[in-house]
Length: 191
Image 1: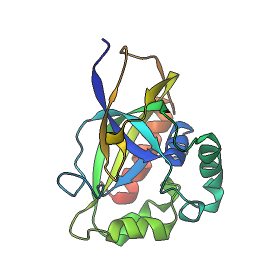
Image 2: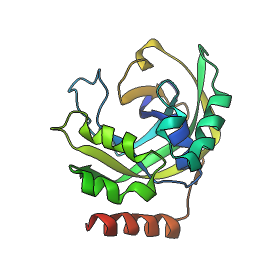
Image 3: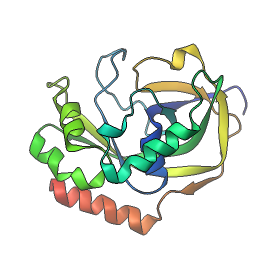
Image 4: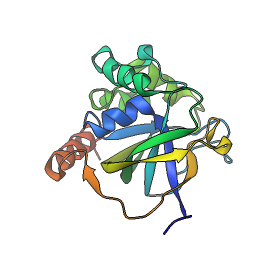
């Protein structure tokens, strides 16, 4: 059905590339500065991943993962009138991380430096850091959508036109690998 919208989570383009390549199955969220509630809320269990470029920097990423930043920036066209959506995600777990020890246990499971992850945890100290475990799918045919003014700003969620649904998608990692990674994360956190 044309003319409908669907939720999208704004995330660094480099992190989306890492998710699509199976490098990681998680993202960390605290909430954008202009969120209505000023903290992160899981507004949908499934959503498109909307790439952002402004805040990602190589020094915030482990050196072994710098290629994801380089690749995403090579594709970025500042002031473009459209943006390419390449991935869809389903949340399988929303883990609330409240202390540094728990966060440190996840260090091998993501691309961000330990300093950056720690800064995310410490920002808005009263709020937990949400670690979303995502089952990610690559769109077989990426979507080109217009960049609208309401997509700008530090917010987690936007509504984008989704065009004809359902779209054909390919899992970023197979079921067995995904389940194994989830089990390792849960074991590390003793869940």
